[in-house]
Length: 302
Image (tube, rainbow, N blue to C red; front, side):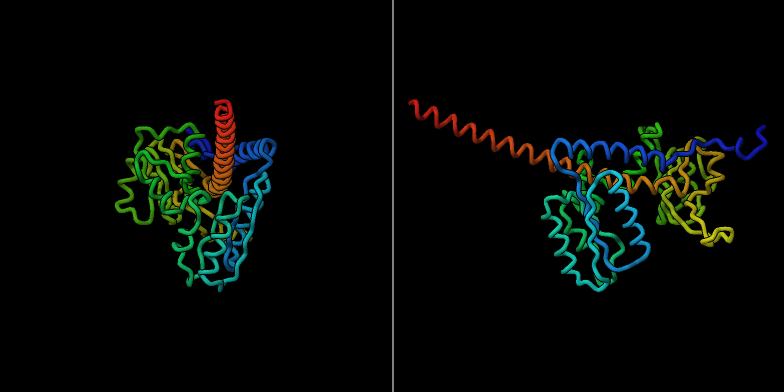
């Protein structure tokens, strides 16, 4: 019988940082190819309203991530009391900007601004957060592919895929704060996506042996031993889960880095889609021009 805690752990730890690093390297390579072949790089615009420290910190992280992979970052900082109409006008200007392929409005917005009104104004072709009603609608329809998938769910699926975990014929449960009879539902799951926002809520004896556990939760709990006075934990009791699950993501270092990586990937995909559309348009114009010349030659020889 195993005597040490390390020996008792069974789960494979899914290293979100390492997987995100690999994806960023892939993105950087593709961005370089776009730059070399087409003389263009993806552009991501981030709008931040007000001066919330958490939002500023998150935007700074996105700016740094863009720089690392060669994506051009456009930062739009607006005052806390900016009118909704002015914010919408700024979104529309970015929609028309030819070098911007992704637009992200940092949430939450101040109380006087209707978030839905603002998000609905983002062009579906630049909706790299995947929040546009048409993208969300297509996501929920069989046989319809959205232009963009929301970054965090997309990151969860990528973690599963790159860890060799198939979702085919598996029972998957997304546990949110609205899930009822949580324990009995989770016990039957082959794949658990924990996203309720409750620290260490899911215990080891809730988890089916060998299940894959993706912990989206990020919760601060008191920890006097830390300089900050707190530490971050997920919705899943990590130590207990490690003894039962087949795979589990840590917090931090699991889903978080993947969310940013998927934002970069969506921006790259938006740029590639636009460049390809422009290439096809150019070829069609050339074809039309050649057709006109041939028609004139035929008419001249009649």
